[in-house]
Length: 233
Image (tube, rainbow, N blue to C red; front, top):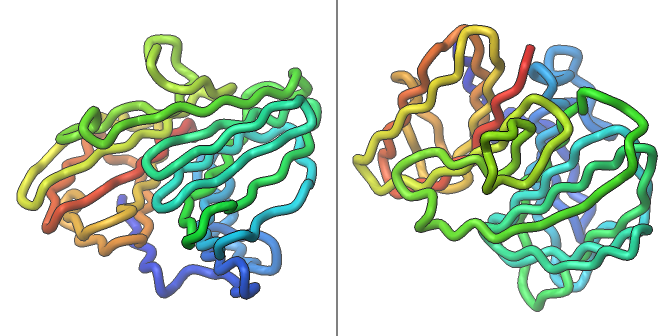
């Protein structure tokens, strides 16, 4: 089963400095049919104006993954971590027992990110943060784990949940496959470009909620950049 969720159907709000689109219920967007997908709870498509951002605020017991699509985001937190994550790179914050952080676009141009929240398997652990570059060439033609709760994904940022966040880049006409498994939930969003997923066309920034599909076959109709979350039910 694949349910296409067109970008124009997503909830959201335009705050001036932030134009946010929500794949799932979030903040003032309430949709009882879109409360999450497996352990995936939030997927926000955020456009952040230059020299603005999210002031310090707190989280607990959530895995928060930031995928930077354009520009860069600068992170600071109550653990003393500070880092700048730029386009194509990923940061993971395990909120654990509690952490306060800020995320600012300190650049001269607009920043665009996907912010993804996944429910952890255990609660109350010490908070943590990390970031890592993932050059587009290293994920050309196939899905590569960017963040993962599986020990075998040694090059991925660690998650405290049995889930993966994966990225791929495809040239127009190129096809790749990913084995999802019958007991897993998948959620795929093309960050750029249109693709065909198991025969269903997705435009850039559309969502695809996937279950009971053992293999995902993705063909790029134009040059495309993809992000996929694979979680337990």
